[in-house]
Amino acid sequence: MLTSNFVLGQAAHFNGGDIIFQLFIFIILLALLKKFAWGPLMGIMKEREEHVANEIEAAEVSRKEALKYLEEQREIVKQSRTEAGQLIENAKQQGEAQREDIINQARAEAERVKESAKREIVQEREKAVAALREQVASLSVMIASKVIEKELSSADQEKLINEYIQEAGEGK
Amino acid sequence: MNHEAPMWEFMDTGIHFNLANVLMMTIASLIVFIIAVTATRKLAMKPTGIQNFIEWVMDFVKNIINSNMDWRTGGQFLMLGMTLILYVFVSNMLGLPFSIVIGGQLWWKSPTSDPAITLTLAVMVMGLSHYYGIKMRGMKNYAKTYVQPMGFLFPLKIIEEFANTLTLGLRLYGNIYAGELLLTLLAGLGTSSVLGAATAVLPMLAWEGFSIFVGSIQAFIFTMLTMVYLSHKVSDDH
Image 1 (cartoon, one colour):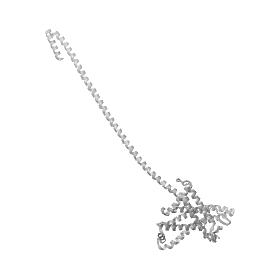
Image 2 (spheres, chains in turn cyan, blue):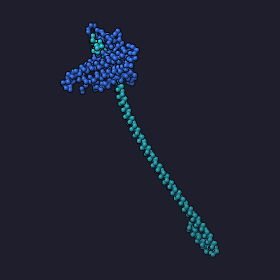
Image 3 (spheres, chains in turn cyan, green):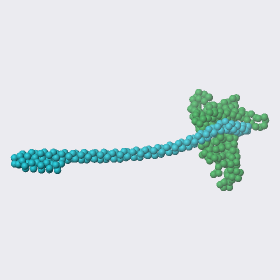
Image 4 (cartoon, one colour):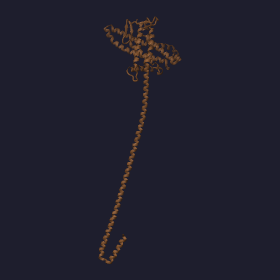
């Protein structure tokens, strides 16, 4: 009895029906699973695959865009940096020019003040000389008249006076 | 293991059904169907729970197919592979937790512990391989495979076809049948006496674990060899 179990089926009756039933049920199972399980499952897996592929593509696109923006921003920063440099340079130049201007002005002013002072000095000196001259003249006249008072005759005196008057008249 | 099989003859036609096998095949198919359908009821782009499991199985079968042939030719066998691996796995597992004997007749067992059933699956697979071989490569190319690389190999090639079929079916049957036979013997020992139960409990545990391992491996091997034989017939490089 034990040996009969090891050979195909039972010795008494070959279970051919099982073969038919196995084939039948397997094909039914295959068809049902294809319709109800594997089909939808493969569908969703395919969908996910596509989704992932799309996402990767989108990520690639946005990465490129970000890179472009970065480049743009970098360009802008560079540009503004040079602009700022230019501004500073300009300001420096302007400051320099202004300084030069102020110094020149001050120098001119000083020159002017010096000039006027000089002129004033000259004027004052001339004035002083003139005053001195006047003083000297009158003093000398006084001295002369004192001296002359003693030595000149009235005629001579008269003559002298006339001369002086004349001289004075011409001098004017 | 000397239990009778509940045989039943269909209307005196000489076609005999082992009703236990019919029952267990139906149960195995039902379990596979329920697992597959519950796993794919709520499909989401972000897989959760049981959907992860079924997608893992699908990736597993995909890998098996990819390791044997080009995906363009192999893609169409994905559903066959999925169904085959789940069906064989569930069938192997069915006989492990217990067996039911009613009136000396064995009712609950693994359907794959019957050679007629495993050989049916094997013959079906080989038949499919020949069918797809002719369909995808044409009759001429198909016939040529029998005389390549050399003509005198023709008898060997014919023998190979039968040997492949026989080994594919009998390997599965042998592994599962042996597992169940030993489990039955251990169960018999365990129920015989207290001493017997004490002796049997450890080997029983070990053998149950090993049988689960063997059942899984056999399901994998069966699917793997199915794809190997299919690829031999449908791929050009063989």
